[in-house]
Amino acid sequence: MDTDLNPPWPAPAKLNRFLHIVGQRSDGYHLLQTLFQFLDIADYLTFTLRDDNRIIRHGGVAEIAPEQDLCVRAARLLQQRYAPDAGIEIAIDKRLPTGAGLGGGSSDAATTLVALNHYWRLELSWAELATLGLSLGADVPIFVHGQAAWAEGVGEQLTPVTLDEPWFVVVVPSCQVNTRAIFSEPDLTRDTPALTISASVPDGAGNDCEAVVFRRYPEVRAAARWLSNYGHARMTGTGSCVFAAFPNRYHAEAVLAQRPSSLNGFVARGCNRSCLHQRLQSAIIV
Image (tube, rainbow, N blue to C red; front, side):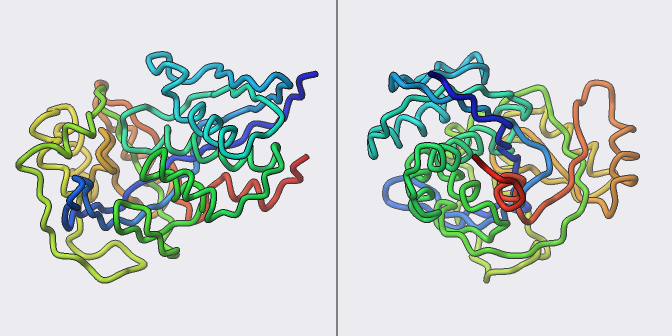
């Protein structure tokens, strides 16, 4: 008999408060320095146990085939490695925009790993889950650990930090950025001098991908130009979203209210502990 495992599990958004590319490995992967911080908005995933070992996805992004969906791949990875005597149905309430640099797909995968580790009684450590997650994507480990962090390597070398927790205006242009194309661009900056670890955004730090993205995607350039009238606007990751920090919700909402009608956006609070881990700490999970 199927068992519905409510309530839904959150899969939070993240921001890269800055992103520098400090080198490139021989295998082509780029070496990064960045600060990850979570937002208090999320996708929500609901899991239903099956007794026939099938993995089924409901909802999510229609353009992504189920077998390519990171949630399905995360569940399949656990199933293949640890052979639990159960399948799973994953219902995805997709609220985060795709291709936006907010980490939605990676976060969904991390939440799937964490939830199924519990419900399939695998008893894997956070480190083991993060290592599995890295095989799915460079951003998955930060969502598994759920703590704001200074990141290096390809983004998997994480040092927990405590950042300020401002309110952010996040503007969402009507385009999706092709991450692979951006990192393949010959003109991409790949030699920014490395910084020492910091628990705040370093002075002058920005996003090394912006110049390439702004040239390829005028919608992103226009969004950043508008938001720069009110604060220090930056791109997050290699996605289309741009953001700026404000000291309180009132200020952030006042800025968002002035956006052009052609721009979508939202206001969210920065969080040093992800809402997934807040839920794990506060809820009784059956």
